Image (cartoon, rainbow, N blue to C red):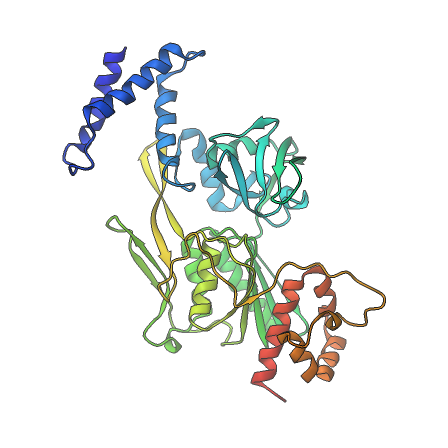
Length: 431
């Protein structure tokens, strides 16, 4: 048996024959691999199929690269494909492996995970009573998924809490609504993008058209990508281009640059002519759950001085994963490049720092409080606008369909974004 394994391993590694001296495997290293497999087969308490050992060896090799690289076998292909289309059954949660647990990147909008109070940064340390250890993202997804209306128990640890808690959720067919929109305060457009999938670009175009038709003039736009874990790069290229007019960008027309080591992994996406919203001021809302494509959008518009970023530091996922077929029944998802902003900065493990940092603050309502402005100091930019334009803002509030003061109690970050846009509007049109 051992001779068979050794022969197979030697055959497998002949592909490295022409590698550089530093990359060549020694006979000792090859024999060590073969011996470990043989000893597992002989000594392990349960009889283990060699096919399973080889599969797990490949998976371990991929997971050793970084948290985003993985081996996807035949059983996982279906769930992997369903993620890309934006419709799948489960809990509605984006996760990555981290030190024997699963860290929550974001819970998607209107899903069991979000309704259960699971937050970005929470750690899932157990599923149905089983403690997680060395579990890949795709394996965890299979454990979390099941028949609609079936239950799953998660053991969750939130940073800063005294201990883990157990949460029981019911699985659902997840229909991700990529884009939502509305008018706030009479003339400010709001577009919520929860994920960048195959439908997001067209839904964003439809949302912009709907907002423009509902008002004679939009005086500002909020693009909300908080807790958006990213998605398809083509989608964010197209959406970023909606707000960037190449004719006004000078010589640097980049949306993002992708730089890798292998041939074919280098690419630059450039803006084209035209601005879908006619150059109105834009604020982009971000938080620690904004990752990957969300960071590309925010950085691209900020670098070109097209938008102000408001919120908290983003996640910092600046790597590109490519899906490469191994054969008809398996593939690998592997990190092949890093992306760079138009100003040639990498966001990997760093994130995007907002221009205006606004934490997720909860403001208690009080009968003694006449206005939310009472909570804002004189040094604050928002308060400065209030003092100079008190009557104007008061008149606007009477006519608006959405009460901007109420937004302050339910979503203070969005409230600040609206006030910043109104401040820009006042600067541009003092009348």
